[in-house]
Image: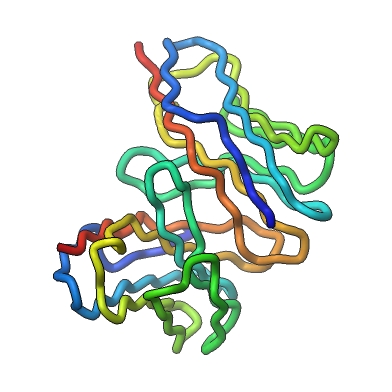
Length: 112
Length: 112
């Protein structure tokens, strides 16, 4: 079975903390993505990666960075968390351009 | 730029009713089109897709037809069940791109 695993379902962090969200896929997929999901806004792409150590900015990269040191793992980093980064974060992966994306269960992050 | 617009929710129906969730898009070239579903507490799952004009995607009784002339990909089901209660997202993948562009989502509730 295809699997994308996000390390935490729920996180509560304080303003100014450095936050790491981890995502692992076991399908040997080339592409990995980080989205945030907010009510009324749908999913918005933060960053994506099409190969190890490669990354590209999505639509809303400000305040975030990413790391992909191994093919199966894609980390989202909030350098200094702020309350407007309270959201649901979804990781996804896909084999190539024309195939479906598989999603993790999401991490609900609250910044207080 | 590329965008997806879905009908606003929430949508509430009785069991066995007919469902339509409207989706229109703006994109250059020939995007691929998708419907994803998010059940409570879970990540997104691909429901159906269509990769070229006039293609019909179908799964679990749901259908959607890629209409290039009206730039639409409306989701339909003839007889909904309580278990169809979820949030539905329309999405497109622009030609030659790896990322997905999502609509804002439509929350569907089916009452017994």
